[in-house]
Image (cartoon, rainbow, N blue to C red; front, side, top):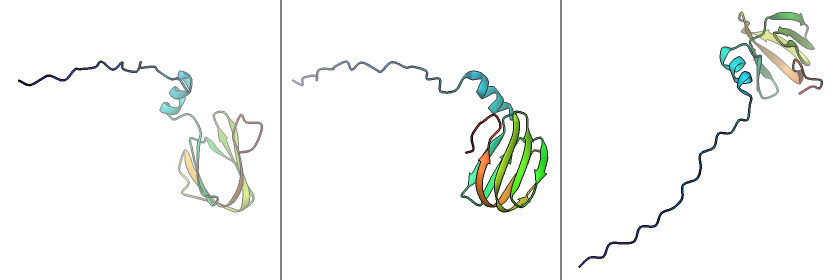
Length: 105
């Protein structure tokens, strides 16, 4: 006659929700109003959701955003793929100053 193996109940971990970002910040992300800067190495940066170009030279690019000015500093900077609310800055990028931030990133 076969014996049935004993079944042992293993407690399942409790499901918890983690909130790493307040809900209102997610709303601006999803709606596309938050400025987004995506760096590709140190030679190219894509900036989305800007509202206009304030200043441009080969050493700095300053853009208007809903939350303030965003400034990219470096050397040999140029603008490429300029669209209504997004553009790519190319060159030797040294510093990116984000709106609302006291220090450079």
